[in-house]
Length: 377
Figure 1 (cartoon, rainbow, N blue to C red):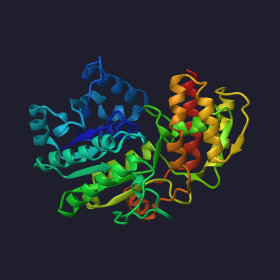
Figure 2 (tube, helix red, strand yellow):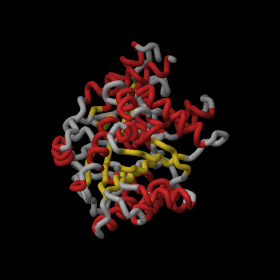
Figure 3 (cartoon, rainbow, N blue to C red):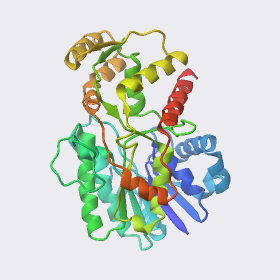
């Protein structure tokens, strides 16, 4: 009997992991959840189950109904001991065989101390909890390929010792978290690190529980938010990966004790990262065909001139859109180079575990179609 604790079940990755776990015979899952303001835990969990029922019918059938194998437990990753009550912690430590930790804020513009509160601090709490579990077999930590920061050339599939600069505090705090995991792994803690690139919706349906950074980038590339003004994109690329592939890889690794101590790069890889100029054309075409935008110019400027123009435009926008414009420098910095993350070794191991690489062209087609349908509702 396998008993999982999953953090981040309401996120893009975690929401795709739980249905796969629940569909496996002899598996029960507890999901760490924080009640929303003005809503109790049961109501928030019901919303999550409704999402799974709508988008994972095969897993629902295999599980006999998600509520029969999945249950919420109240907690908060930024609090000591994950915010668990004494009774819940005692219950978890007695039952838990696996932990999947994928909760974290993906905001790139947090002050470093705040970024650490969601990336570094909870990792220590998960490790502490895991050490208290006598039945523990494996822990899966979801990190990011961003731990390489401004790495030149393909990021290797190993611990990164070299000094490096980071694009943002999200990358820096995740790198610090990996350093903590590494110390524990080298001392014998049974954990695997998974480094996804930019996660998007399901490779087949395009479904995603909520829109994250990729979709903001697509809105930017469409020209809708910038009145058709663009910085010169050059040869910059973006590595994306669908959440069902990431989920399948993590679930498979959790079942294989030989993956302990390993690092998996869950990404497109250097040969399949999409050029931003190509992504821009696809986004503009799909958005126009979907009725999200009419004809919009396409005017390229140097990055400096573009930001100067946008600062002027921002003064005329509503506050919410003005805030979005003000975050552009962070994303432009992140998108300024050719993203290369080595994944040959990871994919070879995943092939052996029955996890095939996704078709990137189909992924883009399906996630953009889903976004258009969602926005037109």
